[in-house]
Image (tube, one colour):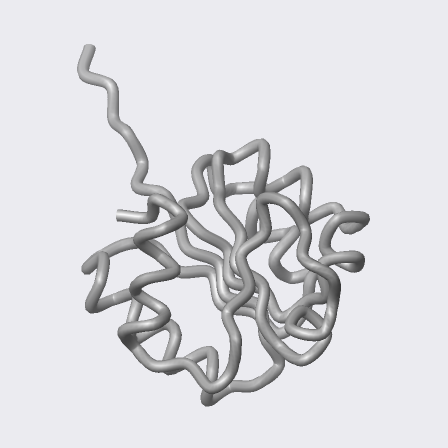
Length: 121
């Protein structure tokens, strides 16, 4: 029997539709055909992850302290995903080991550098 490996998904969590779209387009160029989970709320992401076996990278608009105590932390870790946090709360927070911060303003090249440094595609 042939075993099928599902491609790891990318997660985008932000309430800024334009930013989500820009990030999604960059991921599509970087890793064509990769599954995308795009959401405005943590609860929507949590629900989507229930049926997602593998995560490449999650780009989340959350503060490190908020992320580390959320259910997303364990869900993403369990699925092998790396995390990139973004937004003012993430930028202003003290550095946390294992969490990458995407500082504003960012370009396509900067985002791709972050994706490559987390091991995504």
